[in-house]
Length: 318
Length: 252
Image (cartoon, rainbow over all chains, first blue to last red; front, side):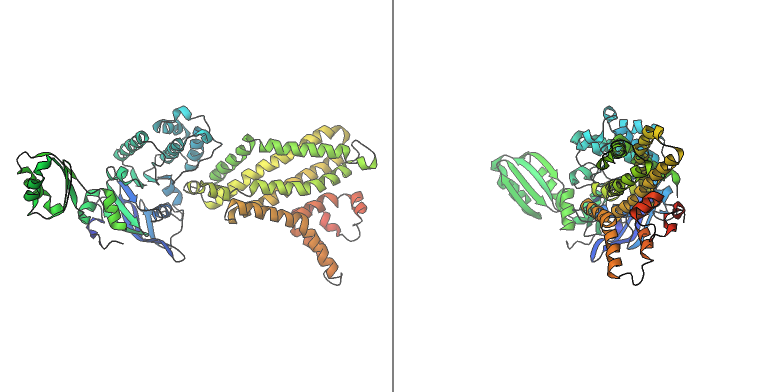
């Protein structure tokens, strides 16, 4: 574990926003293994919430707990202020759409029949099945059997299944696995559309670069615990990771650059031909920028590279 | 409990078996065997052709008692564990359905498929033989069909139980085969062995009733020992409690 203790300030979402999914001290032990260990989360209505972590970090287990598929060792889960198990579970389940990790559907059914089957179980109108297929771009394959579907088509069919019955909350476990970049873009466009309708989306991903530009907030899980939670920007600031200036200069001016930055808290300078990379702490960012600007046209180009979520992520969970 | 949810699951299981021609295949197996036994069952006595309903049923029983438990166990052993192993069980359970509804739906759908193929397969034979049967013989035959369906239901419930407890499909199939061996082949031998070992000193009257713990034996008792001449043929009339062969046995 990193020695960083994330500030608790970001744990609660914006004030008086309504929590649609709330987990309170949720714990799941398998014998001595603490798969999920005291997780507190509040996800508000209309939020696009990401859950990231290594394999085995507890994401999928937490998902299944939130859906009421696995009994808790201790703690409490509330979906729209109602318990996921017990007498009212049917009403809660009808508000939920779920796409499991590596979704498996029935090979012998066609795409349309698959949706009709799940639609009946959810008590959703059958006439919504064709539009759901349309929404994920599978209308052309509606009458083909799932066994003939590609991995990406199965994933899209699984997503269409999750959209049946107009759920208010979507739980999507690694939803973009097997999708090509074009389909990933379409997928997030659909999610944005749903968000404007007030649908709350909770998703996991291991492709961090893909999720960091797209979620409102995210939680980083490791060893069954939430290690950090907040917007991508908040997590970056919390981690205080260094950022990089990438500068292009004529090689003969390298000495001038070194001189100009000499008095600043620079942690590294790497030079290669006409490219110079300068690493500094966030608080030195403006000072470095001013010093470079004062070089009077010797700098041909400049690019600031923020720490990626990958850096944040590994900062927390390594 | 919502019957609608049970019906949706049962309907899917049933239509799956219709669509992949499982029902058709099993019905054909029953028809072919039943016709072959009806016409050639007496061949070793040098006579070919339909003889009597008693002998046909007696021969069918010894076939069906092996076949139906096997078919039912194969049909049901992966009902739940199959969904779990493929990975579709989580999705199913995330629907507004209870585990009990899912289990009951699975069982009823598979039971309907098995009952349908049993009735269709043997029913076709009854239609073919209809001209040669009187009302009493027909009743006997329908009794045989009905008890065959019940035999299937009993072993199907064992199979579905296995599918719930087994960790994976391989183990489930092993357990299903083991159940078949136990109830169809080993159970009677064990009883016989126990009877010989105890030397009829005590508990002799209890052993016939222990047969009732085995659905395959109940099936045999109902079909064979309910036929008077067959019972005397087996030479069991003296030792076998008459009440056991009463079809009303099934009611309690």
